[in-house]
Amino acid sequence: QMPKPYTLPTLIDESLRIDLSLLKKQGYLKPESKVRSILKWGKTIQNESSIAILLDTTKAGSFALLSYNFNGKPRAYRIKLCSIQSNLGKGYIHYFVCPYTHKKCRKLYLVNGYFLHRSAFEGAMYTSQTLTKKVRSIDKYLRAYVSQDSLKQELNSSYFKRYYAGKPTKRYLKIKKQLELAEKITYQDIERLLLLG
Image (cartoon, rainbow, N blue to C red; front, top):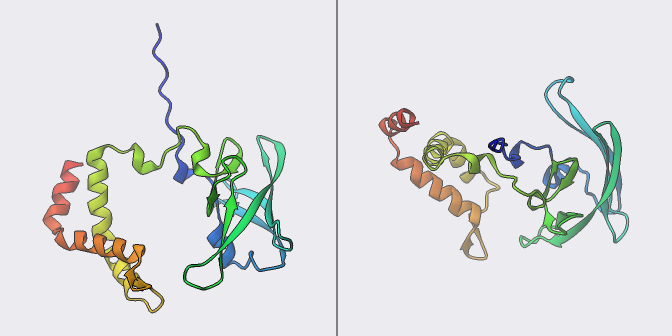
C-alpha cells in the first residue's frame, strides 16, 4: 500500500487578503458614498494580483462588491458590511460579514478562489502554528528582543491609549508583557537560542 502524499497546510497569513481597516484609512468607507478602486498585491508586475472593489455605503444594506478573475474565469459577488459604534466613542467600526460563515471580521482571506473569514478554510493554519514547540519558543523570545524599540516608541506616542474607563487596554497589557520578557533576555541568551535552533 502506497503511503499518502504529504501535503502542506494552507497558510492563512501567506494568502492574499483584504483589510477593512486599511480601506478605511484610504477613505473608502465614508458615509453615504460609493467608492470604486483596484486593489493590488505583489512587488513586481510579473507576480502582481489585482481585484476591482466597489464599496457602497449609500443604503442601510451597505456592501462590498468584489470582481476578479480566478483560473481565467470572471468571478463577482457581494459581501455585506455592518458597523458597530466604537467603545472609544469615536465613530463606528466597520466589519465584513463573511458570506459563508456569516461571522463578522475585519480581514478576508483568499483561499480556493474566494475571499472569506479565516475559519471557512478547513485545515488552514497560521505559519506560527506549523512550527515546532521549540522553534515557537525561540521565535517568541527573539521577536520580543528585536521589537522592543518599536514597542517602546508605540507606548510613548501621544495617541496611544494605556487606559480606557479606568482599566488598562489589551494592547497596553500585551506590550507591557513583551517588554518585561525582552528586559530579561541577555545577548548571551540570544546566542544560546540561535545555537539551539
